[in-house]
Length: 453
Image 1 (cartoon, rainbow, N blue to C red):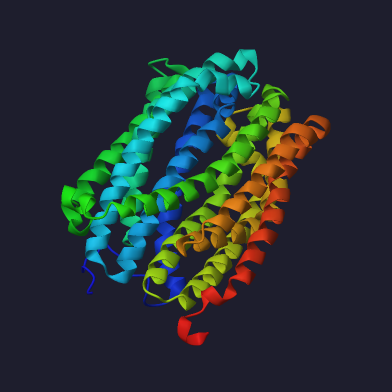
Image 2 (image 1 turned 60 degrees about the vertical axis):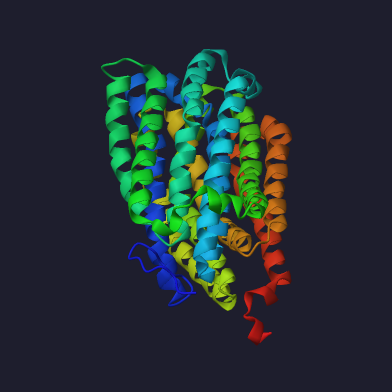
């Protein structure tokens, strides 16, 4: 079946795997960069305008926020993989049906997540061992963030739909605009309006809402192949089950990892506000340099799903190799940053003048970044396997990460202190790398075209 011709789609089943992945991943990376700038803007402006106390209030909820948004992102990414598979197979009716169920399932999950987390937000923060002098500010910040979950889900849904048909550029344009708006609103809400950290959260939610509105208008006007009717939903109810499993698998992959981060955050919070501020500053810079891995892994998921649908499995292996090579090149730049620029960058984004905060944040960076190669292979291969409809191995891999963080959070950090916080993720990356590499070896025949076997 002939695919719909559209200059805003990318067929990843033909052409150079490396060029396609780079072209598709670059806008995702830039989009993730601007998404991260939401958090960095909150951190930097709050630190400069409100002080280390506000920085600790935002940082104390960072792991919980990442867990919730990671679950939402994973859901929509998993839903979109089904759309990608139909697109790769040239099945236009399947694309419409899958798009419809993606919207329905996303709306249901948005209501569940918002209501559920708002109902238990205080007990969750209490379980994180947040210091008394930080608790109320942290609660006000996370309440606004949680209320904005539907807007976060809407943006991720629209971005997932566009990426499923090969358009990773348009979500970037919307995000660039809303990022600039977010910075302006941060200054307005935390400055003249004196809204404190609650203003930082409101700026983030409003900006994401605008991205979602722009994305909706763009899809309605330009993507006829993504428009669905009630008849499309009625004629393919079986898709709801498959999409639920795929989306839930991707969401749990993110959430299991994030639950471990929440447990680890609890042990960090028990160390005191200095270490909370240091870890949030260091981690946000590390996450900045991790984003190319996230972009390449998301690209590999779409690339694998399209080629899996087209029956071109040999191309998936080429894509994984190309993505990992590109990430190794990026890693070299990250190493230069860690060695020469980390202290100045920490001071810039935190606004802190405390030597303890800065030195501990730099320690976190210099322990984490050298261990990026196993982490890069881990996330790229894990997402490629998801695109090939392998759900169990990626989930087991994420479970290993959870176990590692539980061990560190409950037993190692209380004994060894902050250095153990810095070592936790690099250690779990290596263990999970060995697991996923073993799984890929066992399934190596699936990375070859049927005619080659």
